Length: 405
Image 1 (cartoon, rainbow, N blue to C red):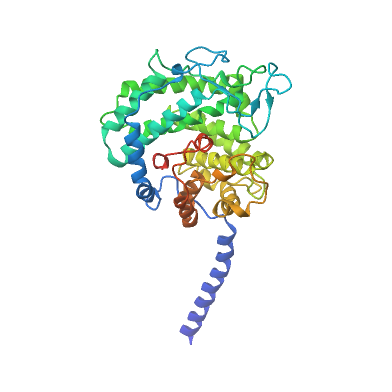
Image 2 (image 1 turned 180 degrees about the vertical axis):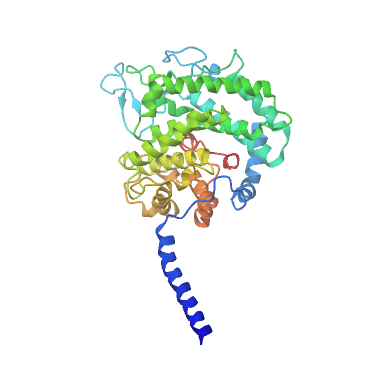
């Protein structure tokens, strides 16, 4: 009899423990795996999915000659031969008076604006990204040597290098010789530094040259964090502020600037998430634009890239939530249904390039890798991985995801 009572009491104890435990588990957010846990990530699947494409792109990249800002010039630039110059995309001649300052047409890109420097920088990013991804696959030093040749031309060689600032980016004829908003153009350099990190320990790495390249990025970071243009961009309340943090984080990691990396982590937590994300995971500042779909995708890509760059085992941004419950998982969950089925998009179609989105957005891959979500990864696999549309390429700085994992 006493044994029977013991068995009954034990069964009651187990039942009560289960009743108390399950709701507590359900209340918590699903946690991302630790940022350093590689055993169940998607890197091997990415290699398998993109292998042919990576080797094809690297085959193109290894044949390319270096083209820097010194190869093109615009009479409208207030800078010199070594200064990066670009013009505001949505600014046009005034039809009432062609010689007067340009006027804005939001969302409508002016095809006559000077974009040669931006295109050259995108090309550099494509070349180094492709070579680094191929090195990650093959560990062939020929890719390292070719990447260094391009980086030397851009950041070290005094005859061809770019000055480490964006003093003359996104100028507007008759209004500004440059603007802080132009700093978004150097998101194209992120895959350059990510690629160099991937190849850093290669046998063919020239470490003296690598340190010289690193010094260029240290100088650029100094300008980016102290010049008024940099401060203006940092304080932007939309995707520009996000992209300042994203690229600053990438360059800070490359230059081993832990203090600046921590500043970026804190800014993501205390400024970007609480001020840009609505309770449902959307980005109201992007939704009010004339291209709400494309801008929402772009900002979410940038937010998740920050998490991918800066998360550590101790400070995993994928698991961070503001006191009122805003977090990056909500951002992915809000936008994902409209990526999987674009016809569900509740807003007006974008005024330009509506038909060209989505592509294989990095937020799908990074989110799938962080949370183990197979649906997000499956959708990423099915989408276009090699768009040739210039607007898509410009707004997709994460083009070689293998080097980010």
